[in-house]
Length: 234
Image 1 (cartoon, helix red, strand yellow):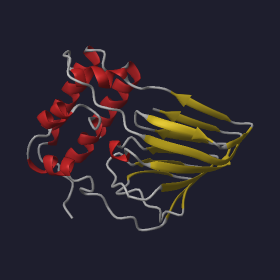
Image 2 (tube, rainbow, N blue to C red):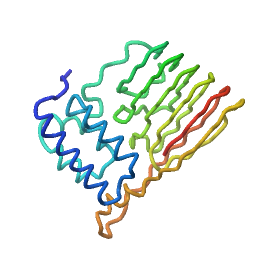
Image 3 (cartoon, one colour):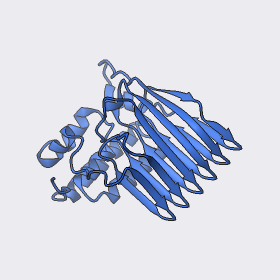
Image 4 (cartoon, rainbow, N blue to C red):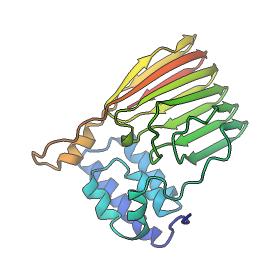
């Protein structure tokens, strides 16, 4: 397995930040998204980390910044430099964990966060052919799951939520259809529609080229959540 690419990181970081500045100046990123991505670029420890900052930018921009070497290989291979799961259960108790996920695996029994924070990033994960089932338990903690993977086109995700007195935040790609079948007891289910017109403007680049189609993804929320909040952003 190849190691993270760090050679050329400072210069590549400058290039990524420059693309963010251009996108922000052209009103293709709002203030919050711009600041978030700047922080992500500044904290990047490898070229692969930097690629995630521009993961949903148009191909012409990504290919310009990451045109050669290992970075290009990594873009072509969604499993590049991702460790295999060591346990079918991902659990954080009174701590904090953030990790890239190599794949959507139905072998994961439960994603559990208790009195802590867990951040799972599926943006470059391998996509299985079968329906995807994810069980998320959050008790007095926060769970953030980034599912903005455009390879989910045509897929169905069953997202089972349990717990309470905490927060679950789910980030989804554009084009998603949400089925809300979760039972809330004294809690809040909030959907924030950020269809991100800036992506369309970036892709159009000021001309009349046809825009990319939104993906066809269905996410079914089930389970029972007490006195907490579920926030869906897409």
